[in-house]
Image (tube, rainbow, N blue to C red):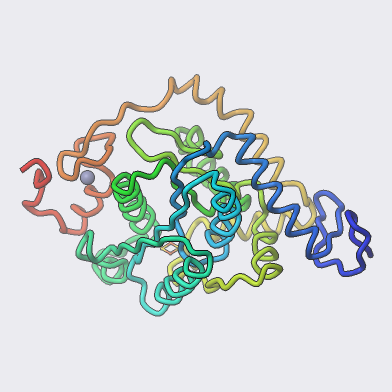
Length: 313
Ligand code: FES
Ligand code: ZN
């Protein structure tokens, strides 16, 4: 089989959803072009933006950084990376090491923050406490809190995350199955909210398998290990089902994504836009109630006590 684009015999990937066979060079080019095209199409980045990549050192965020560095080289954007240490022993250390190496190689400034310094507790410590807790809930909410706070301080216009096509479709299906219809209105290429730094997902239309192929083709050093807390997550179960379905129905991830795009606006109208956010009475971050999600979770694990209102003092 030869490359559909250039005729080379060294094919490295077969795209079952489009029928293309691609050699290494053409594959890398198509991924970069597609991501840059989507950035334009969905207006994810403006000239002069300061973009902060949420860099874990894994394949997805490293790919985002690698492709956005093309825009930084062309002086279209200012690019920096932010890495969060959630405190997951024998797992996170390697990711941070690889993330730092990539930043050094690309000459991109990196900022590292930890749960320990911000919340005085790590994910491992939260998971060791009683009653049993869902790691991903704490990990996701607390990580977003640090990202938002530090991105604002750093003067970022956008936070770019590594969500790929599989992640996005998993989120759509999960929220649908759990009946979280309001969440479905927030899933999209960018998340705009009056009080948060805008989050963008440049890899949203790239299948996970192709992100893996991209890092291999480019020889990027990434942390491929899976988070030890992911094994039991609902997301993982949905991911396994979707991967199984994709074998016989190669276009199913794209059709789910497009279907969601069609109903998203109708849902938004039905639900009359986003709920008004105010400031958390403890930390000052955006919140739907008195306390933001982070402070609510910290309170649940006994980390707030009489610290409440401390930010107003
Ligand atoms: Fe959920 Fe790591 S805590 S994947
Ligand atoms: Zn708060």
